[in-house]
Image (cartoon, rainbow, N blue to C red; front, side, top):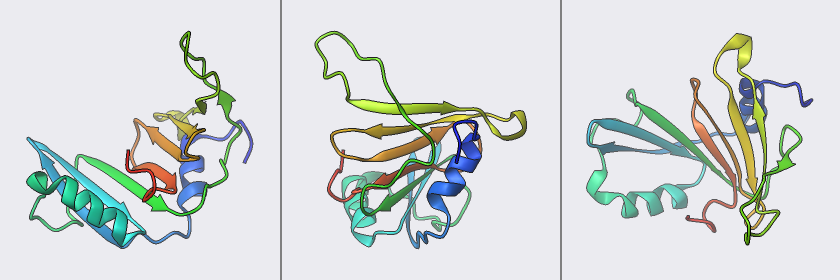
Length: 141
């Protein structure tokens, strides 16, 4: 994928062919959050942490926000990432990122890698889930 890719292409590249059969729903006041993962352990951990906010509605129902956690090895980025500017006194290479336009003029998003953990994140304003890929179970935060 080239640097001229759009955010939806990046999401498709990151998520294609990966099943995420484990899910839960959270209700945070009026906001319903759907979480899916390829890891039963990640969902079980989240279920314990967010126990007071678990929603009894089916996990496949509509949600206001959706997150996809794909647990596995450090993943390659589908686009080139550049070092994020840092605050004085902070480690200079803490995060790398790429801001991408949306498909057909739609909302875009950002792909970012946390250097310390190797976790890769894709998040944006458009349809589709916000995604975390990499060693999710080992990096609860």
